[in-house]
Amino acid sequence: MKDTLRIAFFPDSYLEVNGAAMTCQRLVNFAREKDRAMLCVHAGPETSTTTEGSVTHFSLKRSPLAFPLDEGLAYDPLFTRHIPKVRKVLEEFKPDLIHITGINDVSNAAAYLAWKLDIPMLGSWHTNVHEFASSRLRRIFRFLPKKILDPFARMAEFRIMQGCILYYQMPKVVLAPNEELVSELGRRTKRASSLMARGVDSEFFSPKKRTVNDGILRVGFVGRLRAEKNVKLLIEVERAMLERGLTNFKFLIVGEGNVHEHLEKNMKTAEFTGFLSGEELAAAYANMDIFLFPSETDAFGNVAQEANASGVPAIVTDKGGPKFIIKPGVNGLIAKDADEFIEHAITLASDPELLASMKSAARDSAVSRSWEAIFEGVYDSYLEAIDIAEQQRQEGKAAKQKKQTLRASNN
Image 1: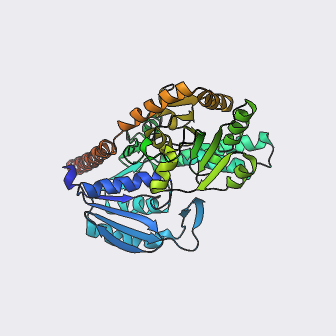
Image 2: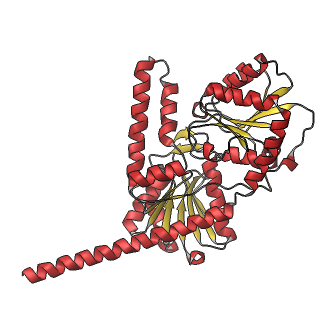
Image 3: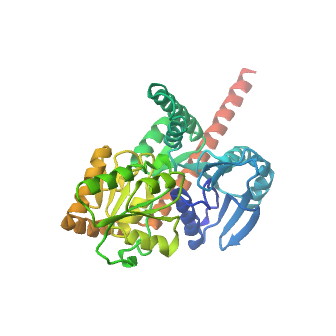
């Protein structure tokens, strides 16, 4: 049954460099490898159609009025101009279900057409947009007094989350990357809610890709260098390590963003690589000894899992999705605040035996996380959403028939 499903997938982030885009690309690749029909509609540099095996890509160019939301990601207020073209492609493809991924121009068009064409819809949650927005507002309006800024940011976060809940009430089934979000979205949307975790390619990300052996301890970070990733904490970690007398170490920071300049100005040992991909990224992970991920807003945290696969234990915060990846003392450590985050980093950097044992355990924990099993679960959820939609159609027909019968008997 899953092999015959026809899925129209509308990822809001697809060609960009981030965890959500990577997950979406892997889902599309999975459909192609399994020879399952999929139409992937996404934003791109040009409007074009390409076909690779069972997958058709329909790329749509954003207008000059599109404004940036994140590194490479934008929102186009004129994106609705593409709806007639998308509708035609959908009618030709005849999908069993439409899969949306968030509140942005691409998924908004998909949600409208799902309603218009009466096609069942599933939604997957990839980004904690409410927390990202709160973090951005705190940075933009940091000149305001704290007693004004804090309530303002909290209210914005609350209102945006309310909007997200309304949006995710449209799909029949909602998928989320961690159990905390699965429970929260299920409870608040009153929709069937399931886990869509993240896998890791443990052959591509591997300790075997290490290219350095100079005895220097490398403390790493991979991700966007932006305020919502809490990357300024890396400065405090480095300062504390130096104050404790640690010297034979350096920071390896992979990524780009508007906090880059501040980090470079305030860190003494850091090497900045910019964005990396492919074998260069795999080697960068493998060259690390400790992975730091101070973000408090990530819904999952693919990078912590990729670090584990590379044989690198990760230190994460107790907020958001990354904490569900880490087994404390096994493949990494979880910190409840900045001070504990710093202490965890110093502990691992100061204890070679503990670090060595956690490196081995980190690799073992990642090997068991299969992308194939995760995506088969997504297809199970597609079937569930289709079944729910069909059941609701039948109930609607029965209710309509009952009403007509009652009206006829009254006449």
